[in-house]
Length: 486
Image (cartoon, rainbow, N blue to C red; front, side, top):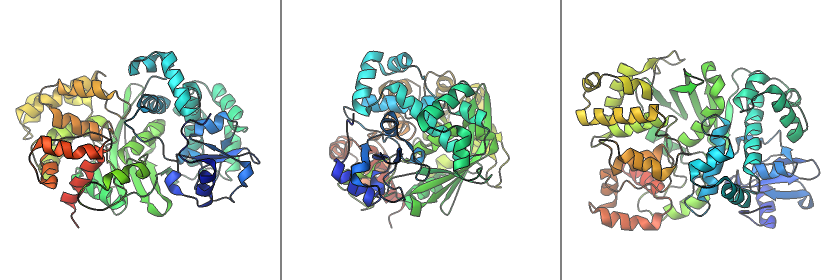
């Protein structure tokens, strides 16, 4: 069953004895004496070796009839990191399935296989070989774990939790929950001891090390007035989200808790129907699923700062991030921020938040697609950028271009570069930050050239061959070296 266990059984047992957070999300332990499965960081008494079974994924553990631990909560563990290998197709399918839980991708296997350009039979075979379970079982696990998190951390009614988790009826939700976890949703809340309090955060774990200071500095230097605010270990921002034909507007507060290797999320009540999707967006935006044990040894070859835990900060809204990249063409970070702030003030949606600094939601694709080009031009955005912005907005609004980490890479890059005013640099940076592609390489980037001391694109591209498949992380490390040399 276990297809790619990162450790042998004896080493895996040592990892759980040490509560090694580096293996969080890469290793799960089923305990035969209790029937539950845990993360390696679980703080309960370490089980006896003969009672342990080891799994790569939560879906494998649940397929073996183990239910998730109520203390360490496997649903908050880091997920799959993007890879560039022979496993890419199956892992891409897994990410699509995670998106499907929140309504952001097709949930039926033939549709998913068609998106990936293979037959559903072939996809089923390679998925089973890599992940140890069928795509359907993986989807069910993701839905139930999301439901478990919402039941534990929010006061949403059980019916709303069922819908938010992708179940089309309360009856099916209850039946699946009882079948997998041997208790119903109401019992889960009772076993937790009390109903969740109103201000309890949603918790998201990450694998250490994580360079929190560098990530927050990156966001702070690019924060857009009215939309974002960085303060201490906190990142706050507004967010708009499409849901069943309407656009929800609200705010998020993201608090890093380094001693727990977690991010704590508070969200506006208006975003409650899409909390599952927001959780996925936060995971991508803060790169919480990255695996430093694989990335850092490669980044050690990159000249510059010897810092561990480099992450790839993305965006919670792929369209917003792509617009900001277009506005950043051939200008400084400060100038791009100024143009973005003007765009938000002119076309953004006002929203009420607990913080005076957060006042507007970034305009969506439909709004910018329908805007008067002359009105955009009065903001100081040159005509070529206006054409690029509106061409991008039209394609995103029509659903012909999708900007998230489950989007098909090659087809999306080609579609972006077919638009007026979008060349390879823009497409690569969008792929790096909106698609979470770990090997993106904007070779003509001036900052990158300055950091590497060469204006020869071929030379620096040849130099970067040693950093595959994590060249995007190398770019981020070099950018951070320039922006924060201390």
